[in-house]
Length: 87
Image (cartoon, rainbow, N blue to C red; front, side, top):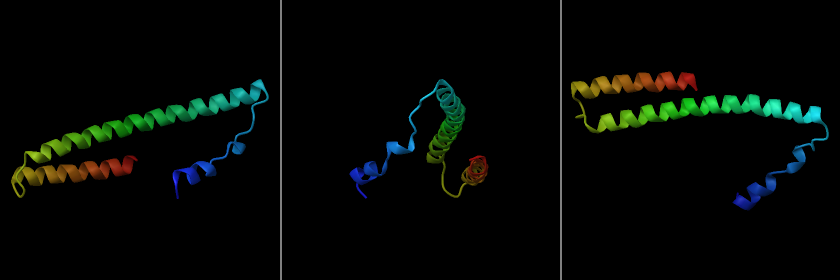
């Protein structure tokens, strides 16, 4: 599907017009609650990306098959498994 098709699938109709202060406050509270969760998840993902960038740099200095390589491989697998459980 093209970008235009994807955009045409978006419908503002699913968003009800805000007609009262109470409705506005509910929407605002919902947004704020979800936004905090988004920020927390984004921070976790940033930490994970940084961790994997560091691991990638460390891999470049290792000789395949060496003891240091095997240790790094083991630590990397533990990290991957840990992060797959977190997310």
